[in-house]
Length: 378
Image (cartoon, rainbow, N blue to C red; front, side, top):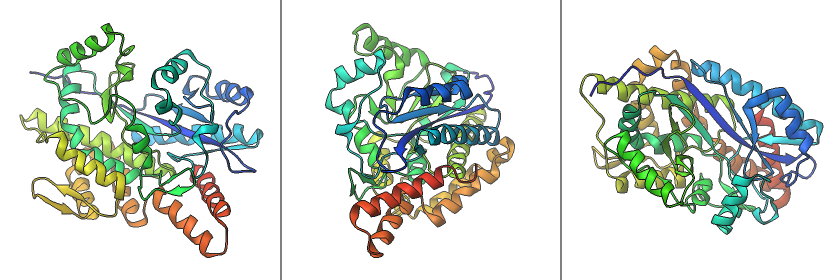
């Protein structure tokens, strides 16, 4: 089968939590004027999310990771400026350190009303934010071929992005508790494997004709073919608090996709491992982040994450050079050395408690750290 050369364009979507600067709690019902002003300044690149205390932005279709980072810097800065006028601030974290989901309201849109009716408490708990990276793969069958292979690398990307260690004021012991919440939804987790785009469409058609889903956008897999764009959309990662970390995740993902395509051109391919194996690494990334390594299935043993990441950087070096994002890819070494947002949140909480703060004060200090880091280096 001959595939057309992909464009490898990139687009990034980020979801932010809106917090009250005074209380550090979530803004459960922010004023409509805030979103309206964001829409006036950003136009089609901002929209409400499921919860009223959330807001989503998305870059334009970008030719390079650097251009996508520049777009995100502008989007984060604009949302922060508008929110500040209302005494609010966005935080780029996948969970809020202490807010209660029971106090939140979902956005008044028919799609969200439908989700609330169908999913009930599962939807009401959905107080989580993620980051989605789209890579332009215009050929339908190639998108499916790469979907099958790319799943292997998803735990690596999750481990580098973790930002949700707290839930309802408790340290969960997980670096990405967001995934535990998201896993309660149907049609989540690792993607199914298909032999062709036609086979994928047949499966989606069965669900839509039975009125189980509206369309393929209700397949909330860790990676999926987008139905809005000719892209392969990576969805497993937490949202990164630091923008440079976001650019790194996006760069690694697009380089992995290009590397898999490059192998395909010379009639090679990455081995497709069973979901039961990949799910073990998915759990390890969710539980430990970078700290305890992942399984190298070829070796049959757990390998420290810094070694795995060095191997991955070398594996995609040719692709990063071709796509002009080698610096962003190599930033992964800094994430491994300094930790993710989850590490910094736990460290901030621990330091505050050791300095004599009570628990609410320490959790508030975590929110303050997230507010500051979200708009750092823009």
